Amino acid sequence: MALPRISSKLPPDIDPTKAPVAFGRRALPKLNEELQDPDLLTRQRALMSLCDLVHDPENAYQAINIGFLDNLKKLLLDEDQTVRQKTTEVLYIMATHNVGRYNFIKHRIIPALAQLLDDPIDICRWNMHYTLKLMSELATGTTS
Image (tube, rainbow, N blue to C red; front, side, top):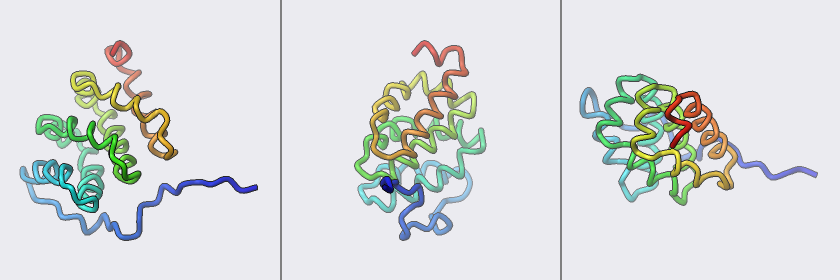
């Protein structure tokens, strides 16, 4: 008997290559505004672009200083599975950087991530576990 599996592929109406991103210093503040937009497609596109940008530690540092972590904490509880998936992906990419791990403790990201332990979407749980694994490699990450 086949088991139901939820695909990790994104909906067909989201094109990550068409996501509008501003240039220079304005890119991350604009994405931060778009993360708070009530339109679902705008939030999804902003998260897709953010996933690409935070691979660079400098962009991750700037994103943290702008206040992305508080917005990402709110998006962890979004009703849309794609938003939760991409939010956890952004967080695990940020957790690969030292600046991300230290600020996760400061902004109490670990308890927010723990709310996804029973998430029905496999990829959300995998990203959450991977983020917690990266946090456990930091001595101060094990005490929060």
